[in-house]
Length: 475
Image 1 (cartoon, rainbow, N blue to C red):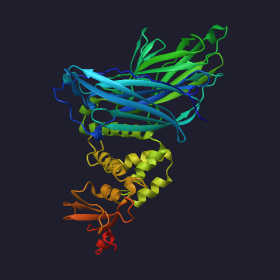
Image 2 (image 1 turned 45 degrees about the vertical axis):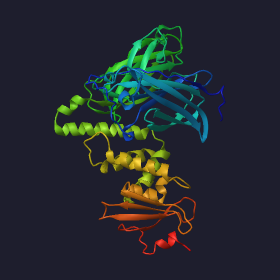
Image 3 (image 1 turned 180 degrees about the vertical axis):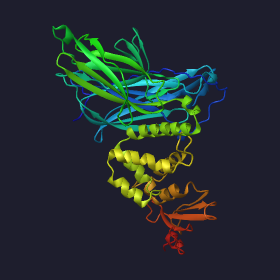
Image 4 (image 1 turned 90 degrees about the vertical axis):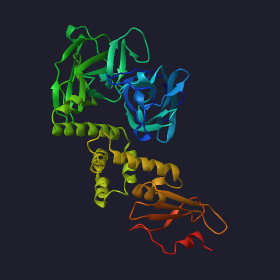
């Protein structure tokens, strides 16, 4: 199926809402941050559209202090571009970039925890798609990409239906349409799906379709109920059913759950709607996370457990949003540090198992498990990106000889480059001074294709060729 302009409608919608937190302000110096820590969050939900189309809403947010502000006259300005694209198979169906500007009078206006929120929409016919999103900071040139596999199912017309559940950080009545306006409400999305400290109410929005109307009083009503389930699927809290009067063929459900007493961890919100006319019921679930800083004061053991849960929830979300191809690619790139047993186990797992396996794989190698970031994973995948960018060619950069050495030994302390000459082939020598008392790796472009192959190394267990210079001077 191919989608032309009438078939796919991409509404360029972008807006922001700043969520502040109560922390000390910065001085007039830009914050220090690195590309490894540059990230944003995104989420999406499906709603019914017209003429058998499904409306996909994309929600995204970025921490304000993750952006680089530069002085612009007497003010400070940050610019970033959020780009979303949808693909079917290998065909690009739509791509839209949104340029965004945030201007402040002083850097002291930026406090930790502030977020800039955005929302975008496009409509597609039911089918399987790949959603790719990217956010780039114009000033720092830092960027991050994510992608999700979308299975867009049709909304039928002959039975009660529910949209996806949109989680929100704030919902309020509104008569002034804006980018977050929906059916009389302003819905500020929570693309992180984190609740707890500073956000004790789990707010959500959903739409109910195909409510049948009849003459009998009882059948002009419908019931809604919501539950909170734990990560194991067991009911944590069940709320009483609520009777609603049908406003028409469709209805909006806006509500909130107080999660202040919930322990930090992973949960699911389950929403059900029951039509009394034909006794039909429909349900939807949405994953969310709870993290409360107050939990950390309980005890060291509880503190560590809650921190572990938060970290695992964050990484679970990362892998949930990755396609299975990307999950497998990440493990393939980590094959240099994986044991033979780990490789065998990974091959036998299904998509869910592979995602869970990767979380444990990196957790075992985390040298500072008490911190919210897995620095080992971040560093390793940063080297993978470097290899793919610098050594790309007929195969991915991490699969080349230089890519392998980079991933196993890190960035060399010294690099000597020797270009082509009448006597020598192009070659590169990497030197490491703090490994095994000092080692070197020699890479030669044997075939003059720019593909440098390892011909000699003084490192233990590596290719060692006492006559390696014959590759440089083959004649």
